[in-house]
Image (cartoon, rainbow, N blue to C red):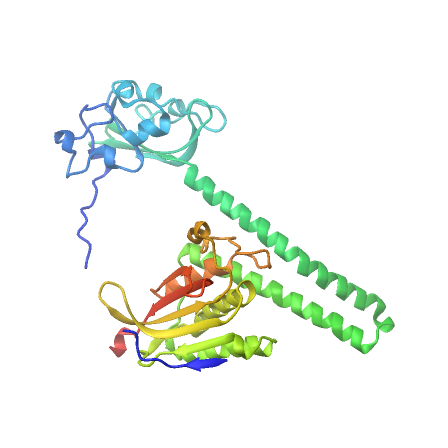
Length: 392
């Protein structure tokens, strides 16, 4: 390992709260929808500005608002929908083929009902749409004055479901191989123990131990993904010596057989005190160095330097890991931090960089990928100092 030292290179939101859809449209207007206050909408918001479909029916059940998103989702032009009965403009059916408006009967049903929760319904042609409704009454048990319907497409939910299915398939595939190995070797040892000498037994047990470690790592990755996706990834901050952490990870690779000359570590002076989760810093460094060693060529350079983060210029630490390999194709760089992305066919689950990005962002930092000065891949992450408030 070569070590070098250089001199240092170098409110509160005021967004207006959108009103409830029930009050957003009470008069007819342009084909795409209407809102009080004329074309400008109410409080500066026009129904067409909403990302979801908005349909409003008056006390007679006639459509008085049908915004652009609703027209896109239902493929019904707004000018044709205005004035139609609600059940004609939105001929929705449940998944059993029953007419939804007949089942729910918003105008003639129970007077205590306030609406319908979101559910999957079908448009003509079998297209799925997520629908929720609110019944607007002047008094709690009075007659319905407006029915406000929200429409959302199912594309995002289907993408999420496909992603989860891919994750399950990947995990099943990755678990099958080591579990088969563990089961095979343990069954062989249990039934034919006396037939093997000590060296053969040791070899089989070492293989079982390695495969068990692989399973443990995969399960840990799955737990991390679950926490990242749900926003529950915990960061337990304490002082971290980032230079020492880099040295430990380089030593792991040299102990495993890599030449010490393959690594060049440059620690710039003036590093600020870093408060971070040491286990997660090890996770970041471990993944990035493993990628550089496995997928890259030539010298792996690790550069640690002071940096400024965010718009306020807060102190931070910048770590760059680069190699001299073929690098990452330009067209693939936007997908590097997504699930299941693999830069080559040299193994791995394709989850490591997705987890690295989640861990860095959980610390309030950023991570980028690009082409290194010698053509290989270059990963750079910046972490804010993260000093606890009581120490400032």
